[in-house]
Image (cartoon, rainbow, N blue to C red):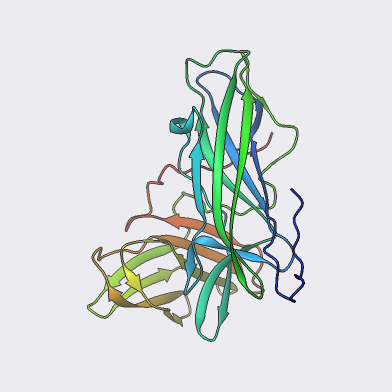
Length: 268
């Protein structure tokens, strides 16, 4: 399907076509081996969709796996979105090409000469001047061989995935009745640090950010907090120009040891 959007006869924005492709780290997989699925989404120019945590408005992207081997697919590793702010409202969006990564464990009973079939359905809100609910599907048939083989190209190129390793900063949460504060210490003078909250049962507002000589504090106002003590999210660091971004996944109050999450393989 070719991406694109246009203007209808009445001057209204036409719902965009979003290309969806299901790729993998391997062109062939072996029994009892591991591969990584690459769900590639190509958004038309000037359109955007939303991260799993959209922010003040929008809709989180929904991914539903299907096929005979759906139980062999692990949790998605979402690439880092772009943070935008308008009139005090924060949003986390995807633009251009986005590649979601998910681990795939090849079962022991897979036989060389057969195929591992995976299907996926994606539902997303895609916006420009107006927003459109877009649904698309894709399928992948991976050949099974005695020996696995990596693909000749990197399907994850250009994406930044949060690391599950402990960040190089000291982090601590401080909760009160009115707010939840994340304190980050050990930040270099020319380094910027941000925090992108992930979905949780807690309802929070836009944080007040206070910077000091060696750190930053994010104070989130609390509306409803049945899970007090911690907010899951991504800790994001960049240089003073907002470039060279790095990110770490914080899924509990103690970020070490790391949590097992799908990470694209390093190319040889």
